Length: 227
Length: 225
Image 1 (cartoon, one colour):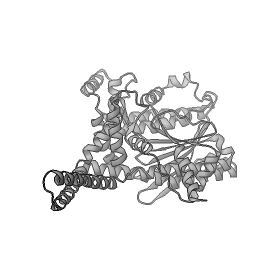
Image 2: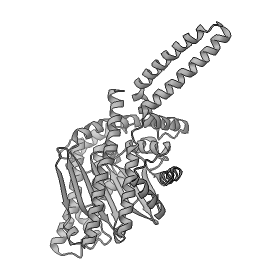
Image 3: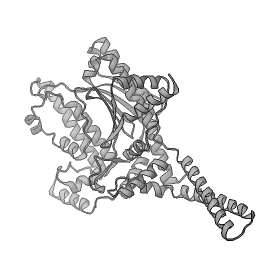
Image 4: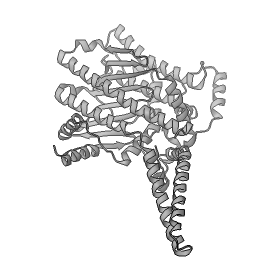
């Protein structure tokens, strides 16, 4: 980033004060409208992981985690160090894509196609994007993906996998994707994962519908006073 | 299974749902998993406490890590998280995001015991669906009940007062009944019209450090959201 753009960025952010809870409620309701407009599909993912973390999603910690992904970070953390050249570069490329993805969302949120991710200690800039529900949702998903890439042994390319994914489009199309490792597994294990996934899809739709009904109801009460 | 037994089972399951740091935890053991399966097969409904439902509604909007932080530091929610704890470890986790992403995570070790795994998965999803089904409260019923009682109270009080101090005639009853009907209609209308203001108060003050304001906003979310 050039010195000029830094200055411009600073100007944009210095004018913004942290939002009050009332403003945040308004922001949330506005974002609900956008979410409802943008919903095109329900996506259910089933992931088998070595260890489930019960820790809460912390936006700043997640941001720091993704921001840190650089070439130096790979060396320092010995990412896929024991792997062959091709596997290693593929593994590192996956990580870098996460950071690029986050940067893409950041640019979209602040409406500046030339912006780069701000340093984690620049809280004035981060507070603004952390108040944006779309950015938070993207950050959470990217963080979940990174958790999946982080294996118990960073030197290896072993990762936790999304074994099965079902996308139900609003127009009625249903797309199923399965990881090739699922077909390498024993038939018992494969059956088990597929059963778990289909249970998840069947109930995932009902769970999401419950959530969606609530927010639509909320939106009606707040915005249109239809009752 | 007797009616009392099934009510007890449903109550047992409702008690295993705990809200902690804005996440919802299902603390299950083998016995509860069997109970959950039975309830699921019999298509029973769990009645959760007002407190859990209020926290769930609050969690749809706010992502909280606890109530000790200053108000404005809370972020809006990015995804509701539900975890199942079984035999001293976290075995299942589901994150439901508003934009249509549902992520299920399963502990790899759980796959080694396929029977446990399927049962736990079924009970986890059933509990989760029970919770999300209850998100929308029946606020109309509450408003109607509240205004009926208000009208009845006003009717009784005004009748007693008028009978004792002003006119000792049965016509008073007719007038106060009309007054009650009017009050019921007006209070119903004004409550419905002020619903956005009340809900805004509920959502923006539910994390207030002031216990009275917090209690009031929790009541609003429990009854009107």
